[in-house]
Image (tube, rainbow, N blue to C red; front, side):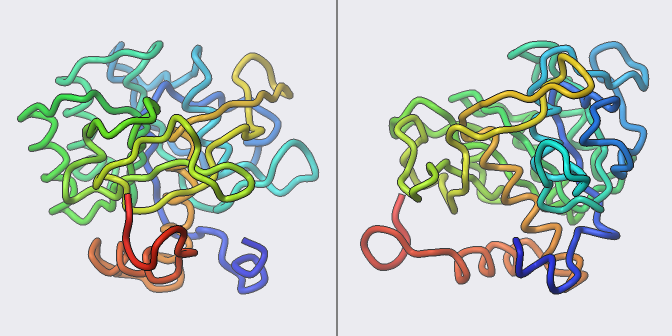
Length: 252
């Protein structure tokens, strides 16, 4: 990330949707961030405030300002669109599918982060993800936190970049899924980030939910440097420049 910063890459001109529990706009580390008006798909209004904190933590990983306060986001000038679909840990497939489609049609996102995933696929969800992908949205998703081989969706769809979690030593986190939905891993264990409980509160959190936005931020930098990259090109670049752990070549 230091190298990216030295090269002037900060996500400028790239728009990322965070489909989650909303974003706590008043947090000190998001002041001056490029937070756009999103949508609350639970209440059908533009109030995307975050009572749960999950979406705010994710937004901070991408867009926390370099202001000498809590943390430094990886793509601090990227535009962030909060798409609120969760009040707590659950939502409806119909709500999620609508938000995924509108990330492309209404909000014109370049990237969409999906840090959720049930173990069962649904046709509406698959169709929505495929639709957004065909419209040019590059989608990252968390692979899940059960530490087994169960495939979760949308991470397991072929048009999505599934992200697993590693700890600070680069070892795969114990609870990160291990299956062919994992395209790449990123930091997701014992992270320090933004809390939605106050304007200057922070917390620790772990999970593939928070590995996925690291990859979304990296993609934002790629798209800033190479506008027009397509899904397959982005996926290949991520793999080709990743640190290869374990046996040479791809492994789960």
